[in-house]
View 1 (cartoon, one colour):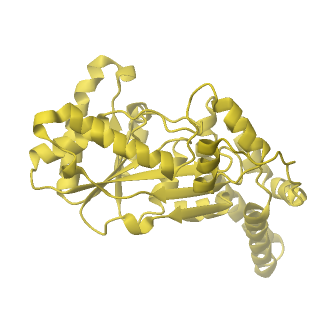
View 2 (cartoon, one colour):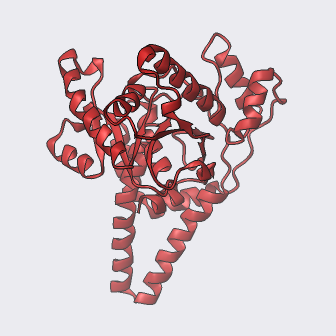
Length: 338
């Protein structure tokens, strides 16, 4: 259901390097985190293996939500901002992760520690290395493969957008672990993962030149999903000439979709006022759309069949879905400043 929803919601989801994912055995996916909870949805629906996830503990405050998230293999991870007294709870979570690896299963983690829409790979926390090396301590014969995963959006938080998911070169964690030099092992693994993420996604160094570089890329209307090409521009400092934004001739189709989906749209507009982080716009918009659109279109289809006939209702439903699909896949997606 999620994958179908993402197919309609995105212009294109391009997957690179999926052959690097081991078919069996313990795997940790280390993913950069630009766009809230939509990131794990996009990555996991393009992995053929069942995943477990570590997410920030704040998401588990509501008891009902906690049960739902736990049923989806999500586990809370506590950070210092959650209170020093909460950090002790991570011991049990880490033990669960050790058992996941020992069973030959997979874990997805976002080692930057938080989401940020900026087009840069931020410093990685050492938490993921503690989990990997802790599992190796407990099970010395265990083999854990770490796979860095870069995710890059053409224009995050805008509909529709192109996305690329880029799976990196497998890292054999045991080759980085030395019990006698734990700190050195941690830094070595963090460096390797970070270096790969900077190649697997668009990375503009977060320095005094960041805004200038981003402006030049946006002005040139580059396709950020051409990761290697864009990263070469950033490293060399050679940017294309400024281009005007392309006209979206399918915009009338967008307004037709709005008219046909007025109630889901109004629900979203009201709910969006409570979204105070740009990184969560896609998360909430997609989450609401995947519920409200099928319900609303199903209700309209039923009403049409009731007042007219099933054939007309079926045609209405197919035309509605095709309209959304055509706009999602063929509308113009210019770059967005982020």
